[in-house]
Amino acid sequence: MENIITIERFILDNQPEYAVGEFTNLLYDIALAAKAIAANTLRAGLTDILGLAGATNIQGEKQQKLDVFADQIIIRLCDHTGRLCVMASEEHEDIIPIPPKYPKGSYVLVFDPLDGSSNIDVNIGTGTLFAIFRCVDWDLRGRLEDCLQPGRNIIAAGYILYGTSTMLVYSTGSGVHGFTLDPNLGEFLLSHESITAPDPPKYYSVNHSYIRHWSDGVKKYIRWLQGRDGSDLLLSERYIGSLVADFHRNLLHGGVFLYPGQASKPEGKLRLLYEAAPLAFLIDQAGGYASDGHRPILDIIPSNLHQRVPLFIGNKELVEEAEHFIRKVDSD
Ligand code: FDP
Image (tube, rainbow, N blue to C red; front, side, top):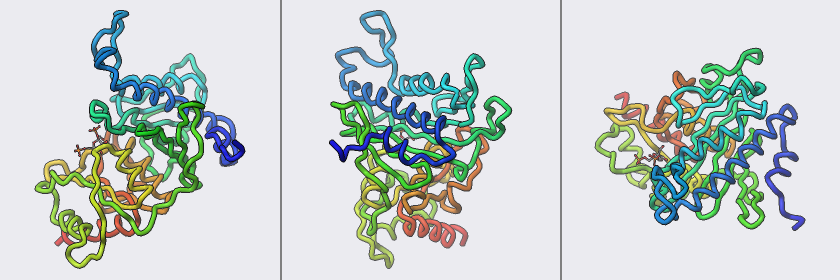
């Protein structure tokens, strides 16, 4: 028992000096929301017997969709604590202000409550992603500007993976640490301390069905990842189509995940604020790199809450090579 470190103890023992109090408690709030979401995603397969999402249950209540549930639980656990000045969620078009009846805090929480939710029906892992910024102006209640900050301003980010077990992986800027939920104790326990991108990497991950829509630079880069055209890489391909699960696998085994832009959708599919930036912060902390194919994801200042961005993320040298191919081939 003495080797067991709960997430509460780890956060407390490792909190940055500036963060004592409000910020530490905000991380606890997120861990609590994660447990509530995990409890519900575990029951997702029972919707057939307990009632489909969107349908009315036996008590006449509407069954909630899991992504709506996840969104509401995070908001409810975080809006009244006095730790936040504003929130933004992938599920909401606009910012989520802190109701005037509650005190205003100094942090900004942006999140994707349940990413990859189309996978729930087929029992595949999904995830919650989050990032925390400081508010821009302490004297004001939260505004859009507080949310539209570049990844470089993130002070903590992480994800929760609802898979064969539930894991919370986060960083406050001093390494990346992973915790696994012990369902008997109802606690996240430290299971992966100081995760670093393994070398040599094992996997590359991309949805190949879009090949006809990619630039020549991206196509050539993928040939290179496949060990063709002069590369001696021996990567296997793995693609789940659930970002957190794909990222997590590559973080632990090494590799690169890419969701490039397409001719008709140059900005790709993934969201800068809720998906790319939090993962870019984590991979940076793990010694890896994230790029949009030209520049670091962490440098991009979002122009709107739901901005999309091409994403190349994983082991540093693999991602830098993507930039190299795109620069060389696509600018010819
Ligand atoms: P989903 O549409 O199931 O919510 O961001 C959304 C996302 O999943 C990511 O989790 C995933 O990586 C990506 O879309 C998969 O997109 P494709 O089906 O186009 O490959």
